[in-house]
Amino acid sequence: MNQAVILAGGQGKRMKAPIPKPMFKVLGEPMLEWVLGACEQAGLSRICVVTGYEAQQIEDYLGDRCRTALQAERLGTGHAVQQTIPFLQEDTAGSTLVLCGDAPFIDSETIADSLARHEKEGNAVTVITANVEQPFGYGRILRTDSGIAGIVEEKDATDEQRRITEINSGCYWFRTADLLKLLGKLENNNAQNEYYLTDTIAIALKDGLRAGAYCSHNPDVVLGANDRKGLLKLNTAARMAVLHQHMANGVGFACTDGIIIERSVKIGAGTEILPNTILRGNTVIGENCVIGPGCVVEDTVIGDRVTLNTVQAYQSVIDSDVKIGPFVHIRPDSHICSGAKIGDFVEIKNTTVGEDTAIAHLAYLGDSDIGKDVNIGCGCVTVNFDGVKKSRCVIGDHAFVGCNTNLIAPVELGKHAYTAAGTTVTTDVPDYALAIDRGVLHIKDGYTLRKFAVKGKKGSDSSK
Image 1 (cartoon, one colour):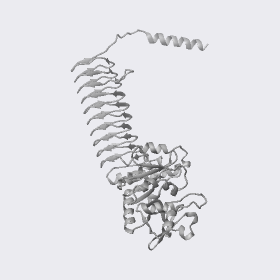
Image 2 (cartoon, rainbow, N blue to C red):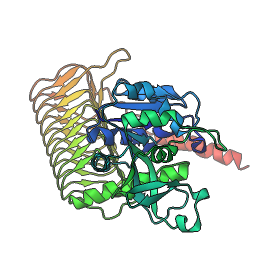
Image 3 (cartoon, rainbow, N blue to C red):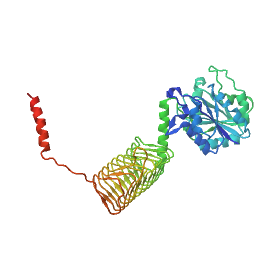
Image 4 (cartoon, rainbow, N blue to C red):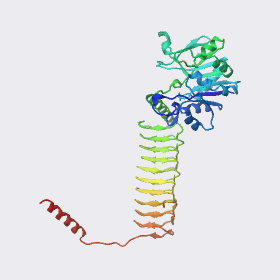
């Protein structure tokens, strides 16, 4: 069986955070997740991840998804792969792909095509390479007519070798049986006293084995990050690649400033995404919508022809032909039905808002079931929490909830029911009824004359 080993034990000291380097995020996902996903998409289900610095963080993230091996001391890439020898020995019939967990842009096509080349040429080892315009700092590939002669590092290269633009990505296919033999022959006779995986190329050639190279069509396979500036470059490259893909699918961007769309998001043709909008997780957006500016949408399904203006929406469903915003918060488990209109400074939580219902502004509706064609006035609140438990409110179809109404859950308004402005509703209101709560109004004649007269007297006294 073909399998993969992912090297993920690096610390990334220049990141200046107690996180394993492969766990730093690119476009909302750990770099390790990008590499794992590429392996799985290429059909590699047997995977071992080599951990090291803060290993428990990676263990917790992976769960039972794949095997792990601990590199207790960081003694080089060859030493890291040596920690997987028990894993490799379990199945030696196929080939093993070795990848870097902090190089997120390896892709399933490159993995599959390089394996095909590796098997066709009968190589003991096949290096995945890329041609780049600026090869400085990378190991150069030295080719021969029959394969490759080796990899020369920047500091050891001649002037002529430095002009080579084909570089080592740090990814390799090995025949598993050959890899086990090569790992046993690695030595640490170098200034760093480390075991380098790149030395397996020279060892294989010395032993009469064939070494080859596959040049990926994706030059970004070589990209990694050693510090925060490098991480920003990775995020920028990933962000623009996703935006370009959406543009190719018919999504509009008048300006890309501040727009972040995670690669799991799906968007229909004709939709326009405005600046400062962040789309995350398993969000699905239909056709001909306008999302933004200033929206954050996460794990939410949105229908067609929806307008969101400065809206934050999480783990909810918004049907077609809905208009929301500005400054609206849609909290998890909410469902906004088609034709609804929600205006400024409204918060919805665990609530269904029925078809064609209008919530103009300044309202909180939590744990509620609101019917169709309902009007919710300014300042209305469903009082869903009594300090111990949360309860639900039900508002029937065509109800009219007057301004500054408090609905003390659990309570139900019938269909076509009205509440007068300022009413606090503590019992159910039947269909077609009016709930009106008016306290005794006291009017004190001449109050402001007396009030301002006292103020004026104090002011005149103080001026003396």
